[in-house]
Image (tube, rainbow over all chains, first blue to last red; front, side, top):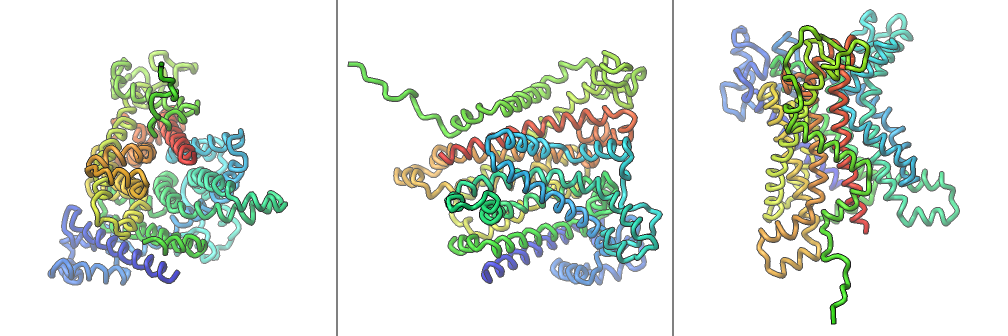
Length: 342
Length: 297
């Protein structure tokens, strides 16, 4: 395990290094002055010369990269070209908002996804299985931006059950500290917390549900396929032969082993979730990172693009490595395969 | 004395043929395949079928509902949008942008990716696990995000969006091809061919290729579904096809403002996209199951 841990951490270190090198290069690849692109200070600003020196632009590329890394770790990620707001502080808040709906959607997707997958695997080829599979494939194919629009039109406008967009009713004065609205309400201690939580919850229902659909449908198929594999194994037959009830066989033998394959493919699911979060944030005006990044691409707000890519890239890389580590830690037989491999 | 015919068939069906036989048993998948063929047909001959141009405006027919509703007009079968453009004409033209172009892009990047992957697998030395791990990590980044990065560099536009998707697809095909060849190269039939002294080129095209083509077909359908979705998503975010282009994603984006007054303007492009994606995914999933079944035999 230690060897695998070290290998994964080395991999993470080098990929993060490559990512930072890439975002550093972006300031040269974008149009305009590289100093402006990385710091957000325009050439006619009086502090321009000082910034250029601090970022090492009078030296070679290597010095510039080191200075870039130093600025990154100091939390100075430049300023937005549009409104001059510091990128890093904005990123923290927006990251929290994105992470909140992503995690909630994953949670919402997880239990029905696994349950339906198991249900389908128990009766392979029967009508239950076919119905669930058909539902899974068509649900997986719904373009998420269309589905979100339909949901807004039907649930929010036609029936008026939920608000159309945003994070919370703007009449609540909740300062954004972490970005995650539920934590922010707890921190802000408003006069009427129940109403604030209720408003935040109502705003959240629609984006989280729409976001959860696609990962759930993928999860159904992943669970079904790995469950089918496991149910054909000898140890399942022997458990039944011992006289164990179907419920116990499922809970203590089939499901834990089926989860192994599901977890191995979980990074696909995460990447699907991240891509959909981007699109949905734009539709629901959720103040998250995807919304911000898309806007900054229209406006060519280069420091924001750099910062946003760096933070989303790091999120993906760290999740990937953590999933690998969890997989190897939880399932010893995976570890054995890894070490036996040349 | 006539030789009795021991075998019913002249020769064994190839792996791909056996997959096709298995595939044909699923009625839904065959239906989906017909839908795809139909979409290819209208993207090739669409302009011959439509009486109007995609951006032709009718001032007397603005925001007409579909023909079967009370206020509809038979001239405009699926109604018109807020600028008086015929919806069905725009949808038919949109098939080119939303289905045919992604299809072409995936075909081109498949050709490049498979070639590079085959070269990488056949040359010794690229076997190191480092490359595999790095590619694994690259695969875990969503293709939409990578396309966004490329569009951030090149600027919005349909051409740039297509280029971005193409560039993103290449490493995926490379990875799949390389892994497939790696999995096959220790099998006895490969060893036998090597002992026969065949050349590397023959080994690749005649020995490996027929056996990995199934994996490539699956990857192709996955790539196609992802490419269609991504092009539409970029169009929807107004980073891909721009305003008057009848691309389904950007039609959806334009319909946002009128979605409540004229819901069909929003519903129809999404429905077209949905049907296309369901068909592609259904064909892909059935192929995957057919291959799985064959491997188990």
